[in-house]
Length: 382
Image (cartoon, rainbow, N blue to C red; front, top):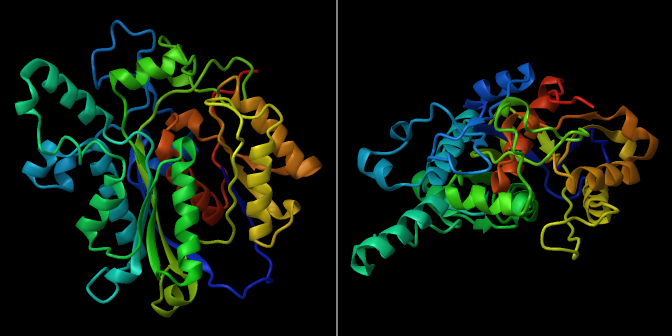
């Protein structure tokens, strides 16, 4: 969840954190411009699954990235063996870095970090490797099987390709991973541990085991005949989320350093909060207490009051369990001011990017604040 507001001039003893670059690979567009244009137009990225033959599955829809070319970012040999989640992460990071105008070299490489959220990592690589093991034996398993399966490679691979030798952290906290990565990167800059960081989230797990597993949890929409209207956050007719894929990366910098080099500043990242429900494997606390604590912590960390907040990008999955709890949490934190918030549940268009959701939605929130335009929530019927 990302909340946006106007920051008062108080509590400025620590280093301030600027957002100077954005990069996106999403089901509604490859690149920031294409993704934002589709978002504000209310276009859905959900359609029939093409990544594998889903004919025998109860769920046959997903929000796939369209038109992405790994060869635009990798050599032919690398593109053949590199799983999509690493290609997406690198593409979004390169776009964000180019947008920021920040160059990474020997002098500032050790002061540039990479913080990347990823939930399931190279699930397709894992599936393919296990099939090779079963059908052809252990001697035919690729030496890249393990390193290209683990989610931590999103941060490591990006750092290797861009020369960022500062703090490197992979965050695996399920759907909160991308948001945690952005917040933890900001904390590193505040502490003076690094001067800049690439931060966000990535996921690419539109694979048989993922779709079957989430369906077994009764978490996915089964609106196979109307995929574009399947993701319905906060709607009475919601029946589950849609699995999405992609990456969202922000360049964060020490504000003073960014201004010194004449960087374009989109926004300031002023506060971060986190919590744990300590409640259940998959269900949030019914009263939304954990979500409320995280929001209150972020608002307090920024030196704001709830009434200073103008815009909110909620988790908004479109599941029976999340949406009522999140509504209660928003009401608990903002009270009557909740009626004045602009709320953009962008998963209605992108689907749920799992570990990549926080990075993409943070970028969307920065753009909404910078451009003064809140994206719509589509598929609201009741």
